[in-house]
Length: 339
Image (cartoon, rainbow, N blue to C red):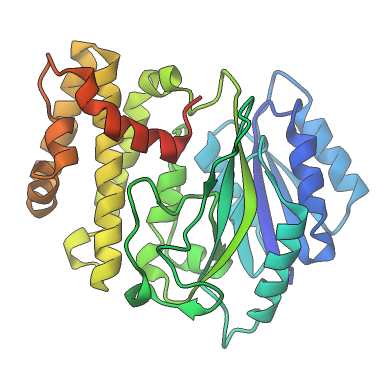
């Protein structure tokens, strides 16, 4: 059995996927790299994947599927994973080689069933093109460091300090046992990927190292603000799926419930602020429908969120001054790294 399976969803990724794959190969025989070609048509993504598979047998698998979107590529990666632990690395991002070695050493330390971790968390870097200072998302103020802990021991997460796909490595069997399944043809499923398994996690470890380099800069990237507004339906869909995934008010322990409520609140807020910034009546109506959906499906969560500062701004009326949304928008930028 491999120690760590790494899924690399690829869609027309030929221009940059080699940099990603080369960074993962530094993990040697301890890693399994599953390159999932999600029906690429505009370039030779699949040929590159098969080239690497032939060059690194036993380490790299090339898997081709009909186009199903990022979530379906993650599903395929998980279905093909044989490693004890599982991570997703997008094809335009990469891992720090020294950080990967440290992570693999730590995972090896916890590779027996009796002491296996459910989740390992590391910092990530916003590798924004042209930026002189690369922002680091760290968790040392919120999480105990360099030891196993559970949700009762977490501290306060400040605004924008959320655990994202870039941060996490899950135990593979935990993801399979909890029934994680991401929707097809939907962007922003990264949030659901991290959020859904949280109540099933008991043993967590945080390493204060910069492992993941999250590239921001392509004009066609899903975190481009204009593209996010154009895909607001998908953002809303993911938010609704997050709501239906758990009865939030029953999540235990309480500290995890508060964290998940905060995470869900920022998802509601991002959808709402994007609708406001679009300036269209159609999107404002979608914003209103989302909040009505929350009210109908979970009145307790609706009351909590509706009365918060984020909730009041998110529900501002048509003539809202955009300056009123600036703080929340900055929080959203910290999470998604809009380019």
